[in-house]
Image (tube, rainbow, N blue to C red):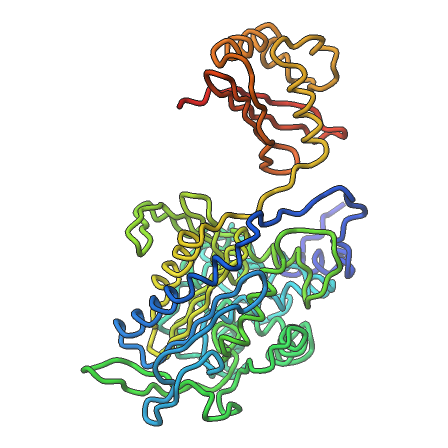
Length: 523
């Protein structure tokens, strides 16, 4: 029998259409633990300590605006889902001397990107698309895209969301396409595009890719992406002052954009809304955007309570993961001068960074002719900052780093403390009873099948007994510090020294001890 050979495009379309679409709610777990406790902040004076730093934060932003010739600047601090402090300096309209405030409406450029990906995830969660669908299923003009190699994978929706589609970095060009019509976008795609990389192999920032996501939202939702985002995301969040088209804004609230040239401010023309608004067209205020930041903060920590937002908390956390590696900055320094290497990746319309101390930052920058902006949240600390400026590509990175670093250092903030799970506490108590002689350890049913084959009972017993001899009579067993639900450490304090005990449990139920390490703590 002869095999029927289908063209690749037709074959992929057939496969994609034959696969069952996930129904709404399919990603929810069948059951969950009633004993899980979410991490919490341990310091009862945390809010008061944060508030005490506000005057320093004000000074940081004021100095930054003056030093960099910003006509105007607005900023805010979001803590535990609330805008707790905000301010503004300078003018949104230099000619009329309109004062910049947290209510002023600035174009936030690429800070718009995560709103677009949130809309994509909402459609995904409703079973209306899949992230690994070929993008041409929704933009047929992509079917004829000439790829660089014969083994190139087809560009997927996820590729567009993570800057891994293979399109070239296009910031200078893309910034001027903002008001192109949907027809202009499709005509561009149909005319053929140039790729700089094979899809899926590397990060390269693409505004065009996000314009395509806007077109996909329009196709799948059956309404302009702006309308869908307004109704599905902004309205539920109470974001009534966030708009796409500047002509709809009261003049007293609209921030005009400027360029600093020849020691004076030159006004930049504002572009109308269009097909590229999905990559950078939003206009909003610090007060309104803080509601969006608060929603991102509310996704943490994972917990078993009712959903209250426009998108599931798990989907918001999914957005905030490092999907495409971007860079390693080995020489990174905070504005204070403190050296701390930083690794960065791109999530779904979001930047993700982690420093040498393990601090994670999630957010995005924004820059267009006349404007610059940035926001960060720190999920494990429950804090975030946002700043808008009305100067061309106004850099907010350094001042926002400084603000967050100052908050943490001056207020002495710590990340959430992970409560000790019942099984972890039980295993710790059983270990303490077992030390130092390991009596009946092999028959205790505490240890996983790998435990003693990895290191014999005799060697383990001698190691612990030698450490006990060194530290002397035990005077205190410290509290268990959990790293997660199945891993932790505690200290055994003796008259002459201290032992650090680390252990981790298996995925079995009940969880057994698979690794147990001891380390003498040097004074």
